[in-house]
Image (cartoon, rainbow, N blue to C red; front, side, top):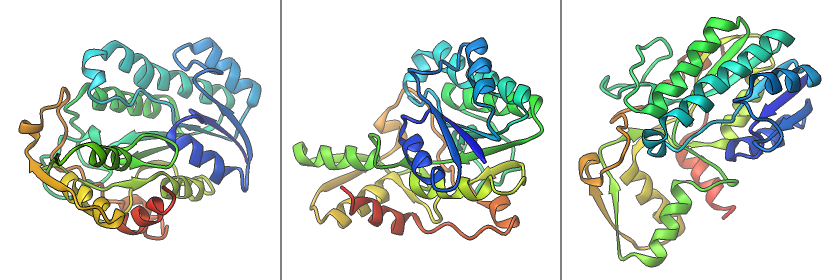
Length: 278
């Protein structure tokens, strides 16, 4: 298949390129080669490539920054996604859209299914959800992939932040009351590669299995790294962030399982493999 990856320079984009190039004819765009907020250029670029599948991995992902830059988040995450969807409609391409656990408010207290009611708390979550709405309104052939707590080799992430903080701090405060599933970009990329092989369109939750708090996650990181660090669990309120985040945003990979795809490995196994690369 001809596959176009939008946002190939990002953390997920890098791994998507590596995985997709094995079996597909690949084209890529970056923030420098295609501005998704320009609808005419977006349509023109996608038409020129004429892909079977477009993987839309470009986004404004600064969750706290989105609160003070709401218009930019809306322009990129909502209107930019609409522009990509319009371009896909013109070329009859299937669209894979990377969405987020932050479309939920975290009050359910058990893992979220694809059919659960969305209710984003932050500007970031709201703009990503509106991107989903545009896709559902405009297209028939789409995979909306919600994922969570992403990390990978080609970008700054929670793991590298923790290891860097440990070099200069005797004590590190980490949020202990938000629960989610850390997800490795390599595992997500491999899952998307499986997904696009079949026209099983719809909404998917795709994360590594099992879950933890950020505090437990930090503990595991330092255990694997063999570092002794004084970690202090704090509440979301004590930590203080510009954007509200869901307290419990574990995603049940329900549709993935229903379609017969293999269970995705534990985040603990993925984390060990990733940290061997550092």
